[in-house]
Length: 247
Image 1 (cartoon, helix red, strand yellow):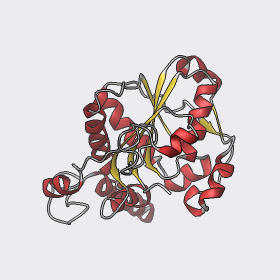
Image 2 (tube, rainbow, N blue to C red):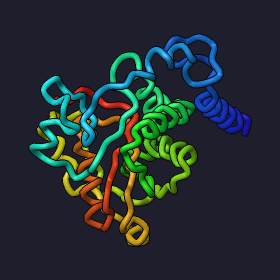
Image 3 (tube, rainbow, N blue to C red):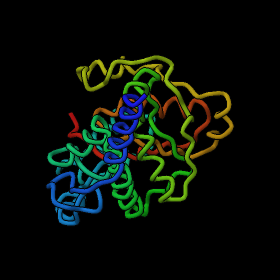
């Protein structure tokens, strides 16, 4: 009995430490928030000229257009993408800390940084409904939480926009996109999502914001956006904390 109590006490303590920040996740100095003010000012306030649709950085030849050449050539199913930061050192470590280190205290930070960018882009209409990229049952059981949903919960509160966690679900357990070559990712995620019957009326006619932690090729978000539109969503905007360099 004592062993069991000790186990649950240790588990609870570990969970609380993950939830309550005591030091900056970037520089390690004492901080009441997930990262200190100095690191936030240095790394979290950079604004880059991005494609309105996929959020990739625009090159000099594309700077006069709001949409990059890749999106003009092959239009994604989603209509817009908003990102807070680039997926690059040292901010990439924050994503890994949330996703694989259970640093749930980072979710409010991700949400706040994403909210600020969204509100700065006055020409971008806010979604009327939020959801998160769903995990498979197996991956959710392994991780214990959906990092994208944790961000979405905070963003929903910050913006006062309704959150529908079960707007979509995975039909099958796909291979992790990060383990695949770029050319394999679209095939891996194809027909991977559907919408539950009790959510169809909720998403019909809505502008849906899909919350995620990282966008790389955008194949997962594209497939999910196509699924939501097939079931009646009129517009889909990706709301993502970090974007990796476009390939």
